[in-house]
Every structure is written in C-alpha cells, then in structure tokens.
Length: 127
Image (cartoon, rainbow, N blue to C red):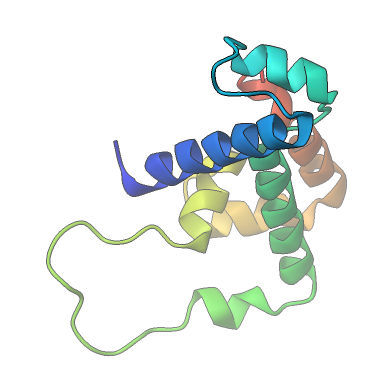
C-alpha cells in the first residue's frame, strides 16, 4: 500500500470519527460505518469532495495559464533514494484517467467534458 492509499484511509477514518462524535455514538455501540453515514445524512464523502475540488482547481489553473510554468518547472539538485514522491499532477492524472501531463491539459481545456468527469467522480467507486 503506497503512501497516498494510506492517507486516503486516514481521511476516511477521521471522517467517520467526526460523525460519531457529532452524533454522540459511543464506541461500545456496534454501529457500522454505513449506519453512521446514513444517520448523519451525508450526501458526499469528504475524500470525494477533496478530489473534486482538486480537479476543479486544476482545470481553473489550466484555463488561467498558471499551471503551465508551475508543472514544468525543473528543480535542480539530486532526488533522494527510493520511489519518487507523488505530486499534484500524479493524483490529477490518476483521477482523470489521463496518461500524461499533455493529455490532462488537453482534457481540462474542454470545460464541459471536464465538469462531467468531475461530477461523475463519486460514482466510480460506488460510495
């Protein structure tokens, strides 16, 4: 399990913990996470909202021509040993189904398709 998957799990766990605290559900009460979400009347999960906001911001920066210099800037120096860290564009490429930065930029330029893709983001994994 990579770092990003671990972070996703922590965000989901924290979200459920918040709902349990808000609803005053004790840990001794055997309530499943699905029951807690239904009790809280949650329309959209926190992780889905974060993903959608990140994708919307990426689209906005593509249209404002700000990301072009940001994403293609070369940083001097040596990279540390091991697997490269995930960056902003890695997440955006994964969520948008793109294979490269250019493909992501091309998709973001078509606002209607990008909005449809962002809107359908929560329905992909069934949550």
